[in-house]
Image 1: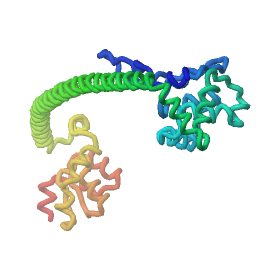
Image 2: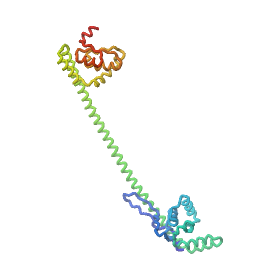
Image 3: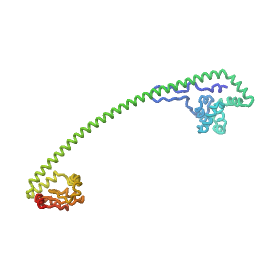
Image 4: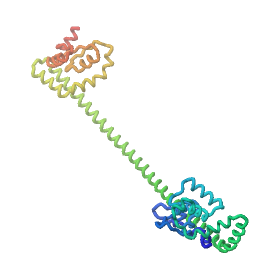
Length: 325
């Protein structure tokens, strides 16, 4: 009877939600802690309810958790109202597996016998009626306590929801602020990028202009020098001119690459005559692309360089060469 009177939920089995920085945790029932001596009192297990009670009963009596089938079956029996916690504990304790485990549940025997008597045919109903009448004052008190317990749970759930909502709102505000900061940083980054691109573009345009001017001036100086040396046969001056071209004209590969853009203009107009072919980069490029070409050069050193490369070059003054055509 005492065990039956205590078959009620605890008044405060939830954890108070505190508005701290840690995420809130809602616990509507205490955690089950198995005992090392495997001895329990009936009231130790009756304080659990529904799914948590099924888990605690199996872990206490059978020393294991129920499988999915067992949990669903026993939970359905409890929720039907025809089986209560005492019935389930008795079934587990006095089953073949429960006897083998040998777990002691004090206070279980008397409530179990009363439940068994109440299930007998004919006399079971009067027994249940008498027990109900005897327990009526306690039942009224239990009902009031249960109402207080449910109200307490609702308060804890409301606290949990309010704290969670407040923290969620704060987190949303924080994320919105971070998003605005990130958007501002992206805008600033884009503005700086545009600024540096403008500065770099101006700088490179200026450098290109200076390089082009320098090349033009150098080409003019080389042309003037070449014109002045046109009729000179002094070997030292010829070597000086060749050295000047090698120093300021650029590498053969670079000059050939610059000439490549002119190939489409002469592709179908062979043969080509290169007047003043110099080192022969243009002749070499034409020959490599299968275009018939001949060069004219009055510097014997450069003519020798071209012929050593297998190019067709005539050592002659270009005006005399043109008059001979």
